[in-house]
Length: 304
View 1: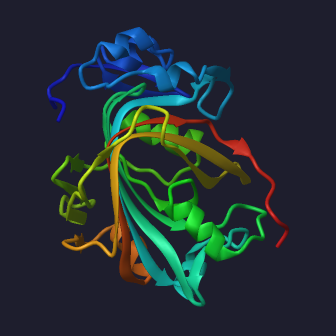
View 2: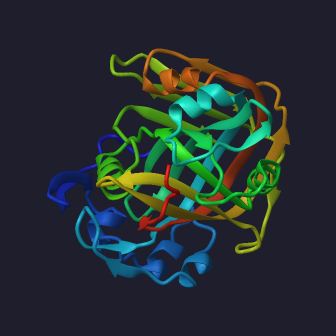
């Protein structure tokens, strides 16, 4: 875990004054990171995935920025659960349709992220999300389910997404439209287990997870690249955000054992309870991966 005593500097982000690590990637490069410099970091396996994704300068709600945002070393744990469609629909905007595995049964997830090396420096985050059908897509839910759970291309709507750094909160909330706030948030993921804890507003536990890591499988860079599309509203208009994940070491298991998911008092736990989860369906753990997070683009939604 990075030292809490590290010096910081102030930067301007869309009119917000934000503290970032002094000498960190954002301080030095402002998103235009030197890939050769990153390649020398012993935590990063290689950077060839990013050399094939040239950045573009775009205008955004947080001012002019470069896209995609690169995450050179990350890990994540996703726990997918069955939940009641009635409860899911009560939390899902009417323009979106949940994926169902059976009549009355949909899918939700709790996802824990750790970003060790990225353009905006180290941070962690946790998402409570609903698995949705692609916007304006009338295909069968079962087909969507098979594609999504196979990590080919998931679509989601995020209810809550706390983060551990100010720059991640401002970029995610103002720039992407995600429901982000800053809190104390610890996520550790390795080849043996995931241990995570999210603090509530009083310093207690909002949500905590401990779960064994299934045996990992290594993949060459570029061999297993999946996509996540998330839907948000910015200024009252719908947008879609594409995330590309280059998986380097990962594993999955169905009906996982040893899951210790503790709900406390806080927004994350409230959101998860409101979805009325029934059973843990699948555990996906990436102990080493890379991510390209693109800026959101406007999307047409069906008239309702």
